[in-house]
Image (cartoon, rainbow, N blue to C red; front, side, top):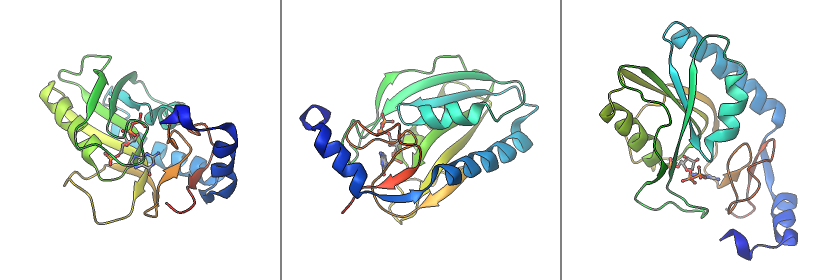
Length: 187
Ligand SMILES: O=P(O)(O)OC[C@H]1O[C@H](OP(=O)(O)OP(=O)(O)O)[C@H](O)[C@@H]1O
Ligand SMILES: Nc1nc2[nH]cnc2c(=O)[nH]1
């Protein structure tokens, strides 16, 4: 867990990491997402939830590019819990902060990997009475291990099948603040 990592180790992880997407590429992906989402949802008065923690950066950066009326909320669900492989169950740490009954819902997250997190979140939104539920992610990880048939409505960009960090995604709790998307050496 994060307590056992030293400053030197964390700086080495960054120094040895491969940059997969630069900050400029991330910004371009967010602009593309904003255009697509605006085209679909600008007249729906949606409630837009970022999934904490990973969705925080993506949501914060994307929201200012959406120039139409929306409500903004959050929910906190975690499957990886600071580790680099996911638990089977999703742990809810905070339920949706705004009621969604009868509303158009847009869920924002950093990454669609095996898919359990978003599949379960979407299911929970329908159970809570959402009229319709859309999903948007900054990155989709390319592999054939998806555990769900869920189709993501808006995808910023694809990344290769490696453990990535930056733009909200952590390396053992750290480096969510990195402005590009990096892959850990050897992972
Ligand atoms: O598609 P999946 O395989 O389910 O993985 C994707 C999820 O994993 C990460 O969350 P995590 O559980 O690590 O919690 P965090 O957001 O606090 O980092 C990420 O933010 C996504 O929500
Ligand atoms: N930080 C991070 N979180 C994830 N959750 C699911 N896949 C990943 C990943 O590659 N990196």
